[in-house]
Length: 158
Image (tube, rainbow, N blue to C red):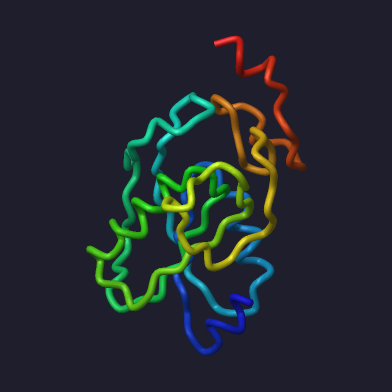
């Protein structure tokens, strides 16, 4: 779908580190459309399993987005705190368009008034804490070549 939507255009894939790095690179490889990629590190989790409700930018973008088509690539949409913040924050850079692309869309987490439009998604998943394929818990499990549900006993120890 992204290839269709961006035919004859060169979108910027804005990879949100660290969780979406594996997905963003695989996505870029599969796309037939020419793309550029840049990286931003933003977090609302820290080492927690639930969002803290505030977003911290740890690494900002280093390219000019003015007049460009930007696709925010993130690992998971659950509370959408980070995604909501970034959709607003990136308007300051005067892009031509901003779309969102997530690997996983977690169902049953957001209240109806918190729903945002996710333009592209890999899959809907139940409200479970997942790790692997770039997704982590306390910076662990990112290297798993699959996505799995983390046992509650692992993260309830804290």
